[in-house]
Structures are given as C-alpha cells and as structure tokens.
Length: 251
Image (cartoon, rainbow, N blue to C red; front, side, top):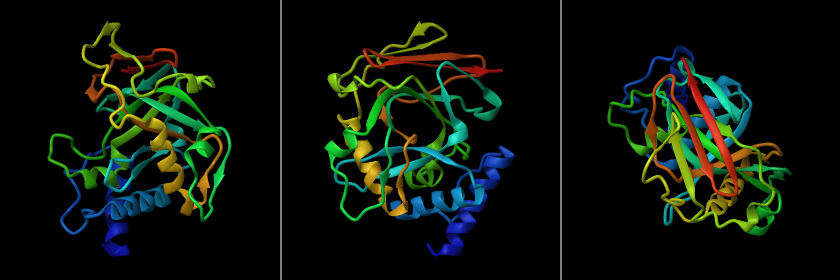
C-alpha cells in the first residue's frame, strides 16, 4: 500500500468512529496485506484523531510478526465502571491480564530485555471492551481487524498489583460472571502461556516511535475468549490473587 491508500483507509475508520456507523469492511485496494500495513493504518488513524494514546493491546504469536492495537486514554477506565453502552454498542468483553508501565522505556537501538521490562511494570486484572468499527456480521480478515486496532473499544482496569511476580500468570485461575451468574469454561489460561513476553514485545515494537511512556498500559490477550453482552449487563472478571475488574453497560 502507498501512503495515499493508507490515509484513505484511515479516513474511513476515523469517520466510522465519529459517526458510529459501522463499515462493511475496507474496500478492495484499501485492505492491508501485511502486519506493517495494518499498523500503518492504525497510526494514520491516530494522527487524524489526535487523541492521547493511553496504551496498547498486543500479541506475539509464535513464528509470526508481533502485532498491536492502540488504546486511547479516554477509553481506559478504573474498575468498577459504568460504561454507556451507546459508546460501545457491540458490548464485547474479554478477561485479560494487563500491565502498567511505572517508568518510561524510551526509544533506543538495543531491544529491551524481559528483566528490564519486568522491573518497571505492575500487573492488574482487566476487561478489554471489544467494539469494532466494522459490522461484525460480515466476514473480516485478521489484517482488517488489525487496521482497526484489533477491535478495541476500551479497557477497564483493576488496581495494579505490585506482588504479581509471585503469581503463575500462565495458569492463574480466572472466574467470569455476567449479571452475577458464573460462566462455565472460562478458565482457559493465557493463549500464549506468557503475558509478560507480550509486554516485552510491545515495549520493543514501540521503540521506534519514541518508546513507551510511564502510565501507559498494555493488555496481553484473553484468558476467557470473547463474549458479546447487551446493554444493561454487568460483567465481572476475577483473577485469583491479582484482582477483579467490573463493567456495567449502562443503558
């Protein structure tokens, strides 16, 4: 994709965010064909929106390029949260472990090590709010989703836990309830087995863009899968020993 196509795709996503009218997908010629193109559309969208970046969602699949989505600061909420459903009408939820950077990791040529990242982050329980700028009834490629910040609609954050290093984050027990009723088969573990490795990958993906700032967060993949709720529903996710995040989709 050339810069014209990237900017044109971003303009469609910006308009969909502002108008709250979902796209059927990106038109032919504007669909990203690589992870780098998906990231480029994200970055062009952010530049046009002019919003403060509060964090990221990230994944580091084995034998594949790492990828990330941008989370804007005004969509990051402390738990418990009453979130107007009109802002995120798809009402998607995923229970995740996230990290907050207590110190900045500025741009540098040498990649950050696992130990360096671990030394400046605290973990917390989170609910990722999933809301796409596309009509989710339509078939979408993963790269189209990537261009739309991997369908992120926000993040609900429990208090950071400085004692997270004593926990086994790969197998940590998770309980998810909707309207106080526990959902079965939600204790799936981390999809890649190591959420901290995802945070390390994110720190290194952002090195060429000025580096991660203190106070930014990264959420690292769903332990519960994706569930679509409805206005009026309340979701609570508890990670044993780490914390609890709660969101109500206010009518």
